[in-house]
Length: 77
Image 1 (spheres, one colour):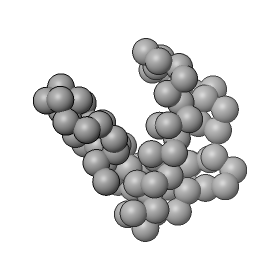
Image 2: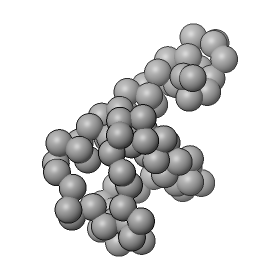
Image 3: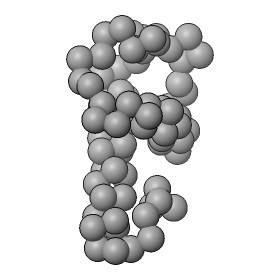
Protein backbone atom coordinates (compact mmCIF):
# COMPACT_ATOMS: atom_id res chain seq x y z
CA UNK A 1 0.00 0.00 0.00
CA UNK A 2 2.92 2.32 -0.50
CA UNK A 3 1.05 4.61 -2.88
CA UNK A 4 -2.49 3.39 -2.20
CA UNK A 5 -2.33 1.53 -5.53
CA UNK A 6 -3.89 -1.64 -4.14
CA UNK A 7 -6.52 0.12 -2.02
CA UNK A 8 -10.01 -1.13 -2.75
CA UNK A 9 -11.79 0.82 -0.01
CA UNK A 10 -12.52 4.46 -0.64
CA UNK A 11 -12.43 6.79 2.33
CA UNK A 12 -15.58 8.76 3.02
CA UNK A 13 -13.37 11.68 4.08
CA UNK A 14 -10.22 11.57 1.91
CA UNK A 15 -8.55 14.16 4.15
CA UNK A 16 -8.49 11.51 6.90
CA UNK A 17 -5.70 9.60 5.15
CA UNK A 18 -2.90 11.31 7.06
CA UNK A 19 -4.63 10.81 10.42
CA UNK A 20 -5.23 7.12 9.69
CA UNK A 21 -1.61 6.64 8.64
CA UNK A 22 -0.45 8.32 11.86
CA UNK A 23 -2.77 6.09 13.88
CA UNK A 24 -1.34 3.03 12.12
CA UNK A 25 2.22 4.06 13.05
CA UNK A 26 1.27 4.78 16.66
CA UNK A 27 -0.53 1.48 17.12
CA UNK A 28 2.25 -0.52 15.47
CA UNK A 29 4.76 1.18 17.77
CA UNK A 30 2.61 0.39 20.82
CA UNK A 31 2.47 -3.26 19.73
CA UNK A 32 6.20 -3.42 18.96
CA UNK A 33 5.62 -4.08 15.25
CA UNK A 34 8.06 -2.13 13.05
CA UNK A 35 6.54 -0.30 10.09
CA UNK A 36 8.47 -0.89 6.84
CA UNK A 37 10.27 2.23 5.63
CA UNK A 38 9.49 1.42 2.00
CA UNK A 39 5.77 0.86 2.64
CA UNK A 40 5.90 -2.79 1.51
CA UNK A 41 4.03 -5.09 3.89
CA UNK A 42 4.63 -8.31 1.94
CA UNK A 43 7.15 -9.57 4.47
CA UNK A 44 4.75 -9.19 7.40
CA UNK A 45 2.55 -11.91 8.77
CA UNK A 46 -1.19 -11.73 8.39
CA UNK A 47 -1.39 -11.81 12.17
CA UNK A 48 0.72 -8.65 12.51
CA UNK A 49 -1.13 -6.64 9.88
CA UNK A 50 -4.49 -7.93 11.14
CA UNK A 51 -3.60 -6.98 14.68
CA UNK A 52 -2.76 -3.42 13.61
CA UNK A 53 -6.02 -3.19 11.65
CA UNK A 54 -8.01 -4.59 14.55
CA UNK A 55 -6.59 -2.06 16.97
CA UNK A 56 -7.26 0.77 14.49
CA UNK A 57 -10.89 -0.36 14.27
CA UNK A 58 -11.16 -0.62 18.05
CA UNK A 59 -9.75 2.87 18.51
CA UNK A 60 -12.03 4.37 15.82
CA UNK A 61 -15.06 2.79 17.51
CA UNK A 62 -13.98 4.25 20.85
CA UNK A 63 -13.61 7.70 19.29
CA UNK A 64 -17.04 7.41 17.66
CA UNK A 65 -18.67 6.29 20.91
CA UNK A 66 -17.10 9.21 22.76
CA UNK A 67 -18.36 11.66 20.15
CA UNK A 68 -21.88 10.18 20.17
CA UNK A 69 -22.06 10.32 23.95
CA UNK A 70 -20.95 13.95 23.95
CA UNK A 71 -17.61 13.12 25.51
CA UNK A 72 -14.35 14.77 24.60
CA UNK A 73 -13.33 13.16 21.29
CA UNK A 74 -9.75 12.27 20.57
CA UNK A 75 -7.72 9.15 20.17
CA UNK A 76 -8.55 7.63 23.54
CA UNK A 77 -5.31 8.64 25.18
